[in-house]
Image (cartoon, rainbow, N blue to C red; front, side):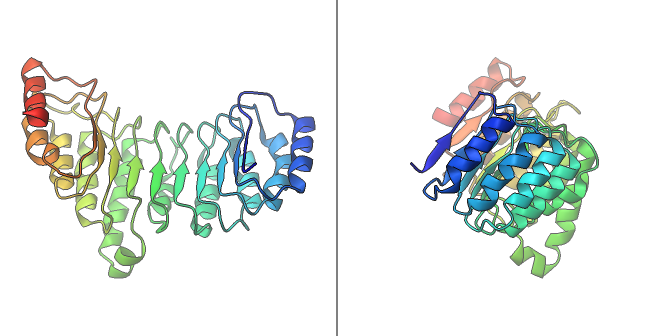
Length: 291
């Protein structure tokens, strides 16, 4: 058996001790899923022995548990000698700034790690430094930061710092940002899109997936200036997946999207649902896709 999966149960101290003992002599498990089991920082202090000794684990998912910063730090320390971990999912674990800092350090040192899902936590505070450092981890290919209550000012600061970094050639070459980035459900807004777009143009990364659903696009004026900024940057990318769902995008953006995004031969998935298109805008989109 290479995968151990326990979901939506209750793992307390006693059950954690049994798990640790069961895994002690098992070196075949490469994937561990312990989501939705009410694991808190106290239980994680026991499970750390499991993760410290299982250096062959490649995939770890411990979502929807109340780990909080303390439990996340304990997990990060337990994984610091794992050199084969390539996927880490810590969605909905009540993580904030201190836990995020520990995860950033772990991912930076885990050179095999290419996928990180840190969604549905609380990064509403001043997390510019941590998110900026995440974006500069060269081996990280997919980063999910959706639904983390990150505010527009933090994103503006992050994108400005990334723009500054790309001006330095050593940073430009050594630190490509993730190819697939999910920022949905955060308050980015139209004006921050200007800085994000400039970064996309300057970045050493060829972006493959950009998820910007529910980020308050189309809220400033009827010209959809945020979408205009974004399209101007993405039209030269080999974008395979784009989601702008559940914003307030209007008809004024339909033709722009058709001309500069829909005709991209690399595009495989597009989500524009839940916006403010009229029948005319929908017709423009349909004709652009299938006409």
